Length: 105
Image (tube, rainbow, N blue to C red; front, side, top):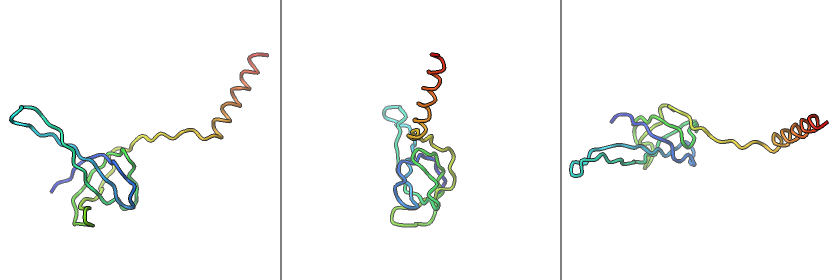
């Protein structure tokens, strides 16, 4: 087997991730390309993967009933939204009040 590239769709397990791998194949009857998605469970030793990361999977010996792949490389990290903390928003509103008072007087 050879390595595959996919996107992490779940990392809720310890040391395991679920990766969706897309592939295209040509349908001869309709003369169109069809996209199919396969989901693989893979071993992530240090829990480094997050949902949305693009990873490369290498085949390995069976590690459990469903895990036959290992995450070998994280190709691209997902951009994760982190909402601003309440303290940061309070500081921003205090600065806005100060600037408004300075401009008004």
